Image (cartoon, rainbow, N blue to C red; front, top):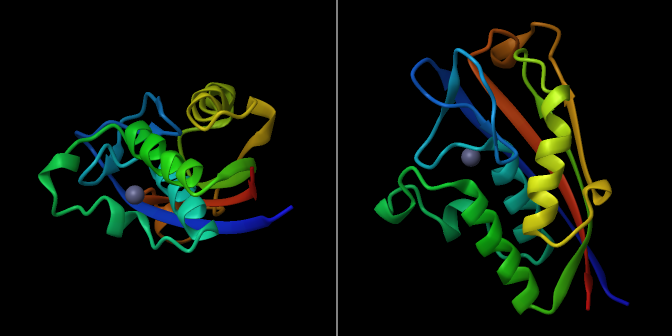
Length: 159
Ligand SMILES: [Zn+2]
């Protein structure tokens, strides 16, 4: 049995007048994430973890932010396309672990919905998609609510 592991990290700025999509869920907040796509930091980190597991480069190489095809795109579609690459290479996902890092809003109430959305796309059970959240205790850019970060790790196995 062949296993491979990958890690991903993503950052986005927060600004007023944008929607806050995290883990495929729209979160009510007075600020949203800035980006070429819907700027879903968690889905982007998970895509990078999956691509990393198979040494396929990064999300920017597959879905360039200079390509108008991806302007405002729902990042669930990017995760779906990334997952298809994994499947085409003959792998399936064992589990995903992730951590969100932001000062506000409180993310805990939205985590079960995010797990459902992600699990459905990558053909896992919600219990195989761990999502944790932390603040930076008001330190740095995340603490000042200028931006947010997501980290993800994915284990995949040859099917
Ligand atoms: Zn991103």
